Amino acid sequence: MNMIQRYKILFCGMLLIAFSGCAKLVDIDPPTKVITAEEVFNNPATINSALAGLYSYLMTNNGAQIFSNGSLTLYGGLAADELVNRNGATDTYDYQFYTNTVDYTNGLPFSVIWQPAYKAIYTANAIIEGVGNATSPAVTQQVRRQAIAEAKFVRAFSYFYLVNYFGDLPLALTTDFNVTTVLERSPVDVIYQQILADLEDAAADLTGDYSFSGGERVLPNKWAATALLARVHLYLGHWQEAENASAKVIGNALYSLASEPDSVFLKNSTEAIWQLQQSEDNATVLPRSATWDGINLSPFLRYSEANPVFQSLIKDISFFNAIVSVYTPDYYLTSSLVSAFETGDKRKTQWLDSIPTPNDEPYNGETIYFAYKYKYGMNERSEPLTQYYMVLRLAEQYLIRAEARAELDNTTGAADDINMIRNRAGLDDITVSSKEDILAAVAHERRIELFAEFGHRWLDLKRTGKSADVLGSLDYKKPWESTQLLLPVPQEEISDNPRLTQNPGY
Image (cartoon, rainbow, N blue to C red; front, side):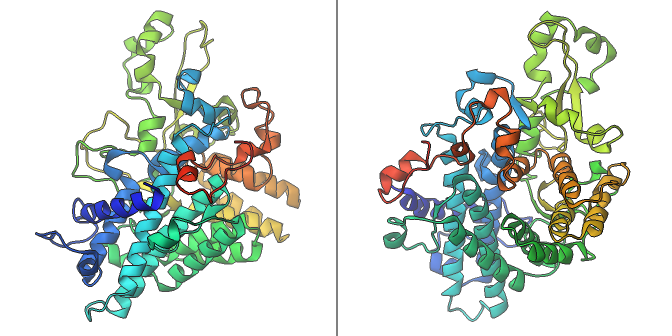
């Protein structure tokens, strides 16, 4: 059974997901009987429910971690210089990301990135086709445009990460089995052309506020499409277009930088452009009221919250070994990332936590730091939600505009944007003025501001050509090869479709 056959079956499951657990996104009653796809797309209520099911999948996926709810942060962080997996080489598949030696037999690229992203694309294609072919008068032009625009946004979002992790890709724009089963890999520039087209269509047709989502920022609107468009233009070196798009988002009164770093990731924060919402009513399906980033990157219990008697025992090696799996996360921050924070940076005090270690081997008294952007971890069950999963936020738009302005030789404007981010973190303005210094300052702020978020660091090193210099200098990633910048095309996909080819080096 090849990829597209699987997704046709999975889409039927998506329709079932659409009618369960989405009451907060669409206020409709679930159907009392099984309905056909044609019926779904001739009814505005069930169209909305199908879209809600797509967003539910991107965040919850019945409790499994996928590209859109945590895997990009985790595996992008390991592939870059952000994260260390606590279990080291004993966790073979994760360790391959950490050392950038992912083998083609490693199932993670398929199971957490390729397959779920294409599943989202297939579902988006089904919505685009179904709504486009709807004949019911109830499906007005406004309903049609909005639904298709949302689906195109999700398709562009999914392809953006696929193309950055795998390079050339099968470009599936239909659910037609006869077409999709024999697709060859399209070049990266062709994939990007489609991403741009989808985002431009989405930005033109999506609602400009959050009225269609009850005021919650959990559905993509016009400005989410514009924000992602700004990022894509930046990646493609379209400096003026990147500046223009980011400026539109920055200038919109809906958005403002949160006053403190700790307020950024609150649900519906003023900085949020698009967030994904956990299932607040479900106390059993992961990530519950937490996020996968909170589960992966934070410990079950925190040393900083322990009583003084307990804290005094930490330096005892026997005691520490007994509690290490509970008080340290599965993935913690590299020393190089921690040392990159400047003195007085609020992001270090508000977005990091730590635990000291014994002076004995293998800890040697080093403090273990971990990400604490998301305050809920594995030990949370059904507490009221205070944070949603942040996908797009305003700080990135300032950094996009700063980089684009620097490339356009507007160093003063670039510095102004950088200083907006630095001042929020309690830091002084930058004093550099040359284009090279400004670009270095942008790279630094992106590393600090966007750490442990959707693999930004990994993608930044790739797109700016810094991977060999930065990652190639790390002993645990040597010998460095340029082929390590792309993941292997899943072998099962090549077996199902002989027209697919493998990436070099695998």
